[in-house]
Every structure is written in structure tokens, then in C-alpha cells.
Image (tube, rainbow, N blue to C red; front, top):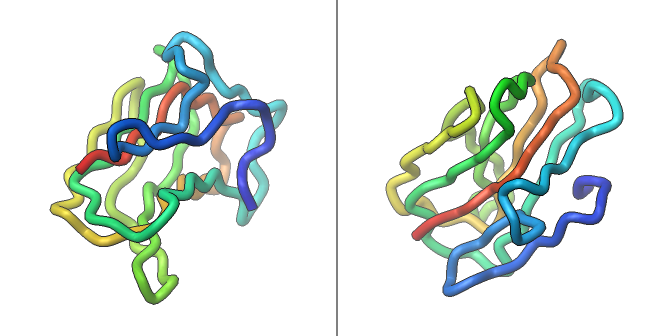
Length: 118
């Protein structure tokens, strides 16, 4: 399940970005997430991920676990979303997708960018 909306997933110079091409453009969910909902961004193929960065508008609330999917298809939590800028070092873990799994009681998500760096 991907996220609803019109924001594009794309690779740029080997770095995945979940973006509308402008950090000022924000995906805003219409409602608070329900149990089991998430935003998933595919990387195209498995590769080493050195970091995950998530940008949100100032004051955006909502809690999520940041996860990477390994070659076995298992999801591993690498950090938690917090504040307008969240930067997580993932130490080159091999992954083919990034997922934000919304935590119970989270407010409606607002996401500007998700970047999986090398």
C-alpha cells in the first residue's frame, strides 16, 4: 500500500526522494491515520542506505516509526519521526523501501520530503 495523493517517487543521482520537487509542497492527509496505515516509498531495487531524512512543515505533529525493508522482506525500525527535520543514520543497511508507520493516536500526517541517502 502506498500513500494516496499526487506526490511523486523518484530517484535522483542514486538518492531516493519522495517529493513534489519543492520542499514547500506538502502531502497533507485528510484525516488522522488508522491502525496499520503507513506511507511506503520504494527504492526501485535493494541498495545500501546510509541515512533517511524526513522533512515536515514547522509545527507538524504526528508520530511514526521510520523503517527499512531488508532483502528478506522484513521491516526494521531505524528511528522515530520527530519535529520538522528528522535525520537518521542507517549505516549502509541494505533496503529496497522506506516506510513511515503511523503510531496510534497520531495526528493527520504532513510530509514534505523523504530522502534515502547513500
